[in-house]
Length: 343
Image (cartoon, rainbow, N blue to C red; front, top):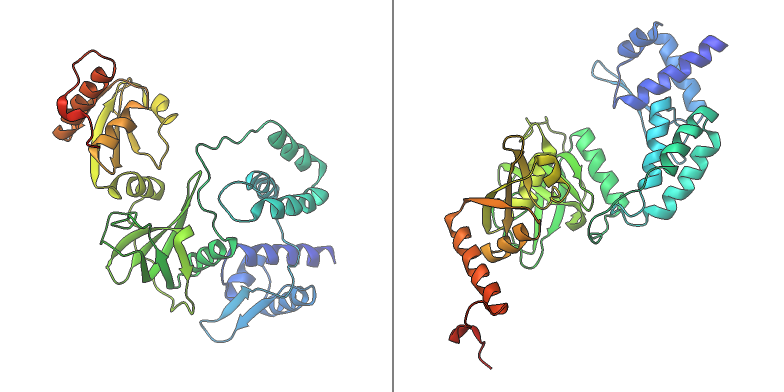
């Protein structure tokens, strides 16, 4: 009986870790016959686990969705990760997640072994989340889950995309779009920052990779068909999205050398405000975008670091204009006749 119970738990763990298994693969992993696998699947079904089976050479077993959520099987590290994630989920840009996280965390901690409860308790007690800036528009958790499932299952996604009224391009700097548009994409990955969620996907109409803000996505099922995943646009998708939302989405681009180490600059520059790359031990290069070069001057100045302009040359002239304007405000230069706006 003990051997059977242990095998059922192992089978359940395999089904939770992979989208679909063939009977032969499961039998090989468990060291039993395909007939034993079929009997064990029936036992799990009796316990409430919805396991789908498809016949034929291309068929197999898949853990499906049921009317109720059966118990999940988590190892020690997974349990700690889930508990800590629930603890810090409130305020992370997912609509209505705070109260739900508290309820789920209470249930999880109730069944955690003492050794894991102590680990989670220490992390919760001595960790303080730091969120910079106001919270962005909340994301519907149902939409987030739907997108994650489509990425996992490699199914096409159809949705309405709502751009900001002043937006000229999507966040990867591609083809101009209007305030509302129907899109069909092959979803690849979800990327989250401290304030927003983004979907990286292959846009079928534009035949190129695009990045979409999830809070502007309204899914329009039915979805599908399945597709063969493409080579991603970059190995580091976080850096790819950062470049898109901090630089390519804007009309004006610039590169400046910050005269501080990269680690120090990273404390002031978030991934949504620009990308950083090392330039020796005591400097780094910031690449960013803005609505205009005047706005770029303000952005760089408020960082509080000495810097050198790399490009464009027009940014240097914008800095001179700002310098003269500040000097006149301080009375160090005479005020220009054309500096007073018409009334």
